[in-house]
Length: 173
Image (cartoon, rainbow, N blue to C red; front, side, top):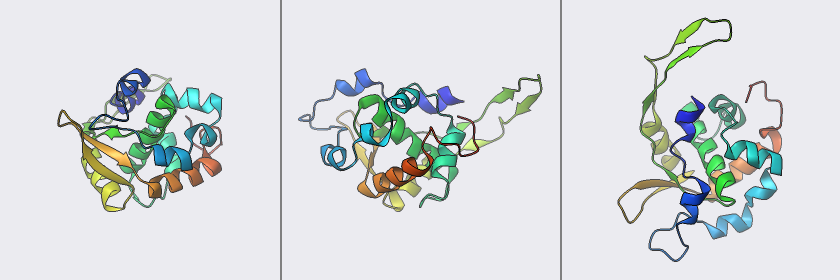
């Protein structure tokens, strides 16, 4: 499931292809100055987060009871952190389509079938926008993105300080 959640997030190389002077830029220099991602996460956490080693459930655990009050929105908040860790700065994340969960085989061989469950990322993105946690923007090719807001980064900074990936929140990363 981690691969499904992280797959849409641009890599550092893809992000580097954009230049701040381009008509569309995913960068947010003013947010980087106020909320430097490298000060919010240790170098070890930056590497773990960049590689997708933090599970979607861990992001829900870290961002639980967010102003969005929605698990899928809290996964999207985690995607903002992953993208920032990869880029070394705050960047936009792409709009995410709804997706069905898969079956999971447990270590003991039991199979859990979650294929009837759908993660409603479209609704979650709207919630983030409605709550002032993200803005919707469109790049030069017509692709839609979520842009982080200072309200979102205030929340992220508070939660990472208390419950970041290196903290024991009762959920396995």
